[in-house]
Length: 218
Image (tube, rainbow, N blue to C red; front, side, top):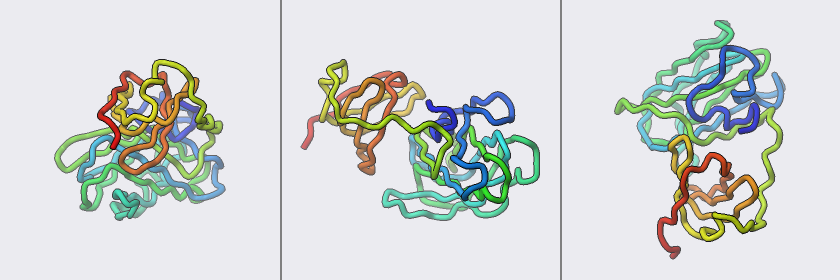
């Protein structure tokens, strides 16, 4: 994972104490613009609560929405972050409004109102059925991280070559599964087109446990 990349907000928290730590997501600028963080979870659930692990300059979350398959947003919460003007780090807990089942949650941050980088290490989603899960994919409005490696269509002859252009399911080391068509295999990353929304995903090969074909293409 890239230091300060949005991917740092996936999985369970791993930052050791408060501070400007590369194990959390940080936006490109300290206070240059308002920001957002979009998180995707493995299972679609009816959201009940969100626990946001804010590790540096907390208190900037002002709105939380859920996204459906068509990217339509539904408001889950809006107000003042409970960590505003509070401790240097902590876990902000948000009770969410009723909503249909979703896999994607979007946080809006008023970064210009809370000085400094407002860093987030992890976001836990609690469902009405009592289940809990960590995000397995994340995107953000900006990031302080180095640019991600450019996706390439160069096809490297390796152990993944037999699966090119096939629908596959990839099991990642955090137990999440990614479904899609394998487009290419580079030195360090696989490029897939996701089944659910046709987004192109870049998967780190070092994080992959297994890859299997799930059936022939139509």
